[in-house]
Length: 187
Length: 190
Image 1 (cartoon, one colour):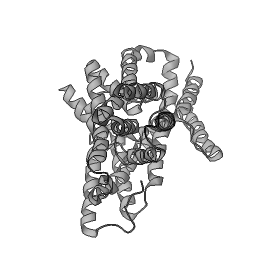
Image 2 (image 1 turned 90 degrees about the horizontal axis):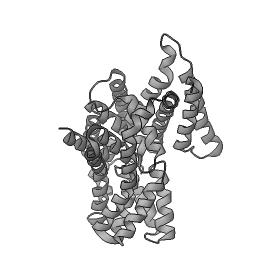
Image 3 (image 1 turned 135 degrees about the vertical axis):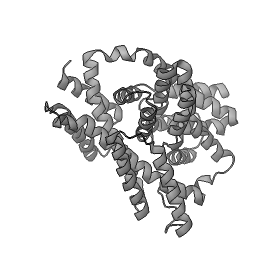
Image 4 (image 1 turned 30 degrees about the horizontal axis):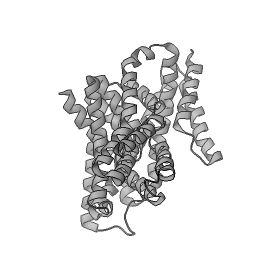
């Protein structure tokens, strides 16, 4: 039953995604791949689209995956599921217990969850960089283009931050990487 | 008032690019400085709460401001407002995306973009690691989950990362029952 799967899948994403949109992508990837809804390349294209259209990235991803799998109602259901935990947690904090987050058991659970999620995010980021940016170098037809793009982007991103003391916005990174992609692989 | 909330947040949803953190500054600008719906201190509170609770940050903020203004209906109106514009935009895009990606130069652009997305995800992870209190237990949990997730990715095992998180939460609770509160208030920086 696709509707139930979409609901449960994106409810999990909404419930466990700490730390903003890019931190949520590994979870979304995990859910989407484990149900076999989309392949990894399609999903990553979608990340770029979510970034360059307005609105919360997680909501955009949920809408996209849901409507691809089950039309407009699938999209609506996935979107509803991904925002439900955040909505109720904030209501709960405001209505019932302002101190809920300071409770010792909640803190103990957070102490375990957050490092675990950090590890998951780091592993996914490394895996994606190796897969898309570095491994083409070790294939039969040695392809230098992807590693070079990766080097340029990494230098730009981390180098500029050192100089300007400010993060380069993700949308600028995506624009630059798109230009580099067209430049390297042809128009 | 419910309608004002809805349309204000629909405007925020329609014109903010780049996700949660970009949205916080817009919400601050509109709800604190222009409309005086919440105070600056409250906005700081929301940001902290939003970061330490799961879910899209924009949703956390919209729910908070909406509830503050008009109770549960306000919370629903603001949340719906912030979601609806992008819902329709993405729905339209999803219908055309496949044809769009068959154009060669666009497909090539996406080859570059995939590398940038990997970098941005890695940076989100580094960011979480930097903010984390580095204790023996938390570092061990992180190293284990990193290793497990990396193997899962490489070998494409079907093992959901949600189980990793549940295991980590249980381990942390058990340690809490054995050892009690770790030194210093709250083990986790928020």
